[in-house]
Amino acid sequence: MITTNDIQRLIEKDTNGRETLSLYLDMSVNASNKRTHQVFLSKQRAGFAELQSERERHHREPMGALFARVERWIDEEFDPANRGVAIFADVGGDWFEAFQFPTAVTNRLELADHAVIAPLTQVARTHPRSCIVVVDREHLRMVATHMGQVLDEHASAPDAIPTAHDVQAGGYSQRDYQKRKAEETRHFFRQFADEVTRFGQRHQADHFALLGTTENTKHFREFLPKEVADRIVHEGHTPAVATAVELVRNLQPVLDELQLRDRADAINLIRDRVRQAHFATAGVQDTLVQLQEGKVERLVVASDLDRQGVQCTQCNFYLVRRDGPCPYCGGELRDGVDLVESMIRMAATQAADVDVIAGNNLEELNGVGALLKFR
Image 1: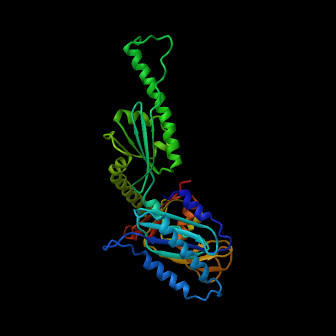
Image 2: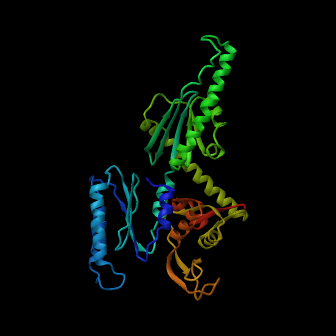
Image 3: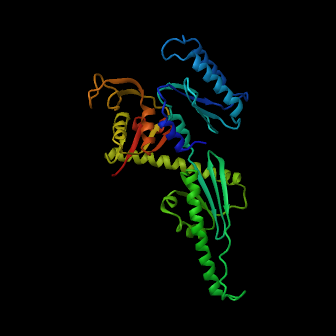
């Protein structure tokens, strides 16, 4: 599965002067129950085979070796239950990294001086990483899930607090017994809260679903640190005894609906703020400026947005289009820059939230918009 650390590592990867292959493959099956990615791969391989290998930056032989390595990985490592693949590799080098996931992507091959991470970011952000927490006064159960699959599960049932030596068996009054059980519950909930925090950090959970009786979940929230409590997006009653797979399957529609609602709320908020000129921006050029000034808190980009621009070779500033030198430093401008990829890379580097959304939802924002930081 894909984590924000994976994406950040790809952004920071030192290419050592080599070009980087970014390959996305749609591994879903068609109506005839066959995968069609091989047609795309064959066409791409044929295009490179026709090149003259001695021409600069034409990688006939290294690309042939890479295509062979890709096909070996698919034969040996690909899980047929998945529908999408992303592969990154050095052309003529040893580095090779592959991801597979249960959602389809559009076939795409890019050679650039960096890994192209926009489609991978779209997959990751469309399917947040969740942690399902089931709690009662004496038991804790946690399930980490991503893209509808179980990543990990953990259960905890600590020993009861030992009875004091000066209390005989059956020696508690009802009042004292209730007081002791309340103290025991607080002790367990403090321990459970620590475990939930660590589990969420280990799996980079974007949000949490908390299940249990209304009384238990309300009480347990008081023990959770704010950064965890603020990410609880759903609370519900304890389900009947269920496997981890059943828990995920039952909750996935709820989590999907919450994700759709969160995106809709973000888009509406950006629209409202843009109209009021209040800590929001829309359109490629204005959003680029705010990103390069480090002011973006949340970026939303249309999935079908395709915009080329320029970048200064001296100060690295991005522009939609400009003739002549860079207006900021006078440096030479490099043409043919993928501005959508550049915006997503900048947002990810700045730890801003990124959402890639169906294009018809962002027409009013000209394909891209952002919520800006208040500070």
